[in-house]
Length: 583
Image (cartoon, rainbow, N blue to C red; front, side):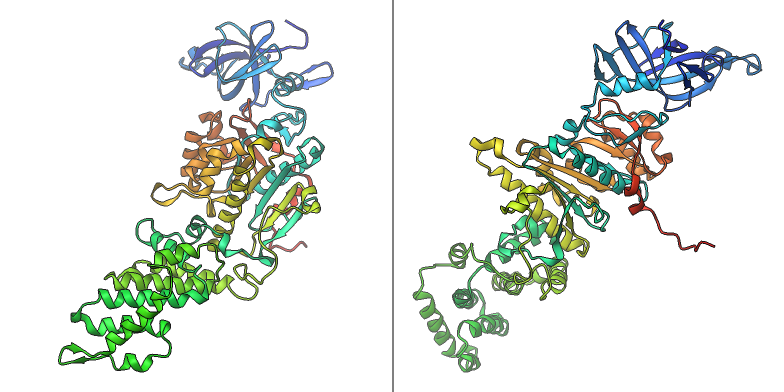
């Protein structure tokens, strides 16, 4: 045994995923080795044993008992016992300088167990890091600052989760700062966008700010999926109405008269004599728009002893005269011809009314009632963001985009996307559009020039507000990016206090987890079932983690471990203000 090895016990039993070893009190007491104080802290300490001279098994202590298993069963054994039993879980094997994660091999009983010195622990972590960034100190080891494998982190989707006040925002700020510190090692096409919902990242000085509420969305660029993310239509009843309205909204002002003429024709042909009053009301609504100078003719349209007057024939004749001059045979052909036009919220609101009119002339009288929840969200969106200073007004500021070709933009690598003044409906709309546009840009990139494809990182704060499971099993853009994004250099990060409410598809694709204090039983159960590398014993500690401490786990971390984030000044931004005045 080498002089610098710290023997603390002997393997007593080995089971599936559990190794127990027994120590004498004298072996685990404080000692000095080469001028360094060695001491055991207990639970969460690392220890190791050997399979051979160059193969180490790293283990983590999760439970301690006084005495040995045999003596613990004996009455009055406490006084005579000078033994301690430790329960440890194997984390992986270090062999030939390379760490292999997982309990692949186990020690034999009788093997020596050694306490981990700072030097030994650094050796383990150096075998899995790439010497680029470190976020802080290993919990229980204040002198060990492990290097992370930044390449693995940046080629994975990440999640930073934890209760309010546990340090999520600080962790992301520190991570951004550390990546910025090695930006000379990053590809020149690297771009990181932080979606800032509460203003938590405004003090990160080296970033470029994109102030969304000073800009506008180009409505014609929004897809049905963007609108669906905002308005949350039901799949079978409301979404077809929304899709149809978006198509009709693009019909130009000069062709609206043709559209009204089609609706008048349909109403004249579909209504029955039994519902004359309803028929006249429906026909009149669209006819007055198609034939604005024929109000008197509409007034003459009555029943004379159960027979319609000639006014109806004159109306139909005039409508046919309009339709005979055009090349379209239906509303569908007209809409298809106009599908590239821009439109306003007023156009879309009118288009909804037209779609309801289409439904009503065909006998569906409940279409308005069945879409009231969706329409309430639309009216809220229009009222809040359609005015002169609203993001849905095309005359308000620059276009909202994360893709620009100017030289200054190309030089920047880190961006804060300020979403602070958006409510949930607008937040879902903007975030969905931005993520989709970035993904499609890379998806449609010339494959022959793949080396020139940008690396885009979209880190989404308060993700539980908009990265959610799609209704009725439909995929959304976040699910698509989670599954396909890595092939096209698009990576996502989700930051949330409620991981169980995030999209299950997104969370299933996460490679790097930074898990802060979590106390909710639903979220704990979710973490237990879905986070690779984190053992049940590690997860059981999460409710008691202090603020600023996180469990790092997932495929991007070969060694799952707790780290105390070295926040520096970044920790001040998240600290709570006290209502109590100093004396």
